[in-house]
Length: 227
Image 1 (tube, helix red, strand yellow):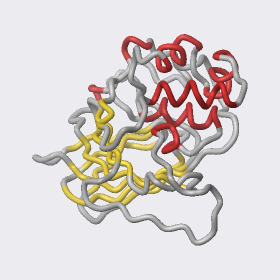
Image 2 (cartoon, helix red, strand yellow; image 1 turned 120 degrees about the vertical axis):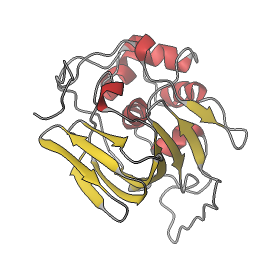
Image 3 (cartoon, one colour; image 1 turned 180 degrees about the vertical axis):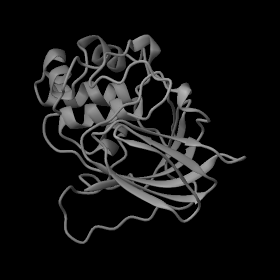
């Protein structure tokens, strides 16, 4: 294992909710808070907090705090909630306007009009957010992390991911491989069940196009639920 300096890399290691990386959700329209949407969808499915926690691989406390707006979830946690609720991740932001499954769908996202999320490590712009039940989620991402030591834990999740380096340089850290440096024009495709992280190693923050596949069904969890 090659992720140097990390003391714990155990699958499913619990993370205290108070230490969850905070994401600033930048509303570009009047979308409801993500916790409100999670609670609404959970009740529509007649799920208890415990039901959703088990389906999403999260603790009951984490789900409750998200619904009540006490914590802001990381992207990985948002993905887990989407899996637990069996919806496209963009539906958690109340941003979809199309009829799911309709033929001949199309959407255009103008520059700067995606849904923005910021964390200490990444700044995401979610593209094509108006389409629900997509097979993959495209994210225009600025990599803010500068060292793997900035991550208290490296996380993975079901599905597969691809990214293409638009500008700057990144170091890709994955669970089973040595870190590798990628330059503009380089790309990588990997199994995202491996824990993984990107850090910028250029003078400026790297910009990448990051694409994650949609995950269906109940999330399998190897160890303790994420807090």
